[in-house]
Image (cartoon, rainbow, N blue to C red; front, side, top):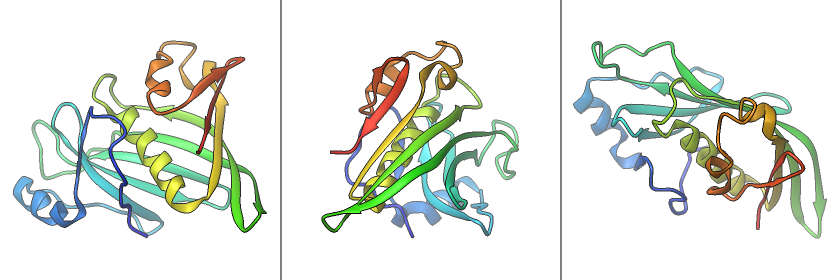
Length: 174
């Protein structure tokens, strides 16, 4: 399954259309590195204009989204081992009036470097992927844990539609 976006949520990074993936990789002399158990979600430039790939590893009841830097300042042809990642776990799923409804828990969200837009890329990839797969869904997670004891502002999440209620981040699809 390929990732097709339906409109940009936040303008802090630049998604690359699928039709331009090969040309972009060729011009920057990098290769996509997607493991057999991963699905390529997309390519984007972070705020530092570095090319990154977004992939998803789906396990039985969990999904892990990764951002991998495809080019470094000194060695643009090698994939670096540093990644940003986010884990979500399926809590429950059901069918009501022919539509699927699923509940997920956001377990963690780690970025390799602050301020370059990768947290936003991960959240946008998660929400868009779930919008394409589920009729209705909700995501919740402990804000204190996910924000590293409040070091990450709530605005980082609210601009994507999350709300804070009793220290719980909550996103509900419309």
